[in-house]
Length: 431
Ligand code: ADP
Image 1 (cartoon, rainbow, N blue to C red):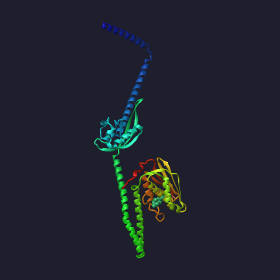
Image 2 (cartoon, rainbow, N blue to C red):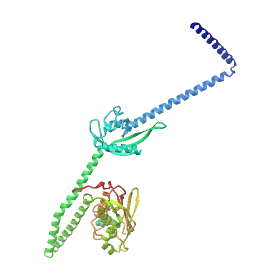
Image 3 (cartoon, rainbow, N blue to C red):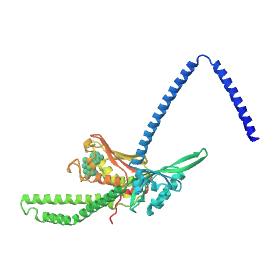
């Protein structure tokens, strides 16, 4: 029965197919004569398709080339790149990153980045990591990382959090990290600090220890001058005079050198100070000099800063006494002190109407013992501005002068705002 049924179906199908074929052939007969043009159109389409295909092949090759370029850039950049998840699992790493840790790339994926953070850096890594995804802001920090061979190296890390959208309402945070090995830099920094400290100590010890024999020379030549003046010949008197004068000068220079080296080694702690209060003290201390020269000193409202009060006092003392000392002979000194805020620092200025400074000496005057005039014209040893520069640098600022020769000078110095703890960066203590 089933076989008969099948036969009938087959028969029926054959009849339907024949009928359809018949209809088709009928239609074919009805096809307009322009079949040829249709075939032509089809051929044109085919050529167009082939051209498009060729273009696609070309674009694909371009993309592959670009991809290769990106891949090379990513892998062989001098910076290690890591992408990590919220559990610090490494989802992607470039060849440089893998080399930094001493592993083949494939050994690092799916491992946890925190495993490679040195013990003493775990805390700071965790806190930067948490901060990055809590605030969704870039974090920059330095930590120790452990290489495969167990050696720890120091890394500068820039960590950038970003969202990965898995679906319109499902997103996940991932962190991209750029890692640079700064071990060499750290070593150099350490070495520089050490040699700076050594130099400071050397300057201090040398000037301190030189004082003693010099004191003996000075007092005995003075005794010699006192006791034998007029008893030897005129030349002897003159020579003794030279020795006395030179030893007094040398004593002053050694004291200056000592003061210079003490800026770094003997500074006191930083505290919040009112600059106007310091300035008032300086002005009253210089009262005699101010009165003698008929000087006029004015100042604007000045901010509070975080600094070593004694050193800021010394700084203003140097700048103001210079402004009076290097006055024009026929004009009473006019000095004005002001400050402004710019780029997260205060810029202070002390301007005068004095003799001014020729442009070629603008830097030289900040070097120790460098003066532009002879001592008989203007008193001094050339230490004031060198000490001022050291003080400003210890506070993390800069000092410079702008001047119009013959018209006056303005000395500027900067002090950082709001870097309370960092400001004492350059301090070295040798107690
Ligand atoms: P000193 O005052 O002992 O010479 P400083 O280090 O204070 O040493 O100054 C160095 C030199 O800079 C001075 O000898 C002087 O030539 C120049 N100078 C400093 N301040 C001023 C000023 N306000 N006007 C003109 N020249 C100045």
